[in-house]
Image (cartoon, rainbow, N blue to C red; front, top):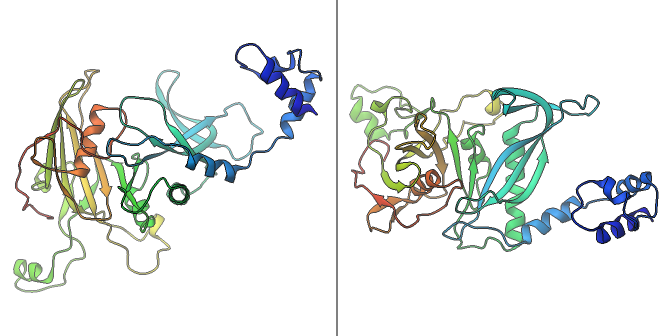
Length: 356
């Protein structure tokens, strides 16, 4: 059998095997060069069984023991493979002169489990190729749901454990994904564009009549929260300040119960019934300096948890926020964390601002 010759050559070759051609040159491979690839073509991988096996292995966890999953699109660039089907233009940066380029290839949506600290090791749990024109949010939602269901079935999460934290980049519609994944033990944390505009909670009838004694139609949304205009933000519900080695002081501010104003177009075009109000927490992270000496622009993140913003205590015993603490920790390390870590110091601020 060609497959048995490949296995014999793989086991008996001295040193690492870097190419398949090296196996054909091994003395234990007693067949021709073409038989090597013929044997590989006869091999099959049970994808469903592999996914369940990956969900059952020991996974890295954050400092508080919770699972942290990251979702991102990683392209397999195939610019010269003209005859390959289902290629799409993949966004790349750093090739050639360090410019943004669109290169033909196969984009893959990858889900990986992260750990706390500066490390490049990740535990890949799932990978799905995105077809040209696919709805990335819909594919990501189905992928995350299946991964979480496999983790729960494998005993990686049990009732009473902290919710699984899912980290998304700015290219994802985090509020919509959080809405579609309702009912799962998840917390969504996604990076937001710096030009976004959120809305505050809808005022009650009593609040509306006090502000408009002459009456009128009650609004569906509250006032605007413009990321680029500090005058519209009001008082934050939580603030944490952390001293980091590379970035100096990292300040995280959190505003609770903010939501985007959905419109009946694009992803919500075929939605039946009234458009949902997806409230969450908005986090602004600003560091004192960058190691490269560049401009330290603020980073905006949005989180949605199954419960309202929780008040916790840091190591110093001062009030803080679990959501904003996780954002602050991501400034001092390359991986996000799900809970507070030693050394956090929070400043007391009033909590009666707009949107509370």
